[in-house]
Length: 113
Image (cartoon, rainbow, N blue to C red; front, side, top):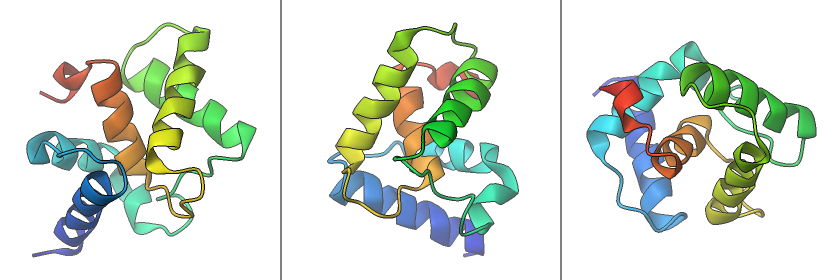
């Protein structure tokens, strides 16, 4: 197993144990690959849930550009909901896990097919 496989296993563990979800491994793998080299960077691999600028970046670059969603208050509500599920007190909210949950939330799995 390579480094990426180790990270995907860690993300799957977070989804199961911290978010109470059973991950679809195929989709999780594709979302992780979609994050690109950011997953190997300690800072870029996580989402700072308390920084408004970071949440705006997730909204614009992922939800609007990647998933093709129109800007609306529902986008920030979904981000807040996902971060709540992950656990506000959880220090490391992995970007791939957050993106996976957002993809599932909006039913946009087809983007990764």
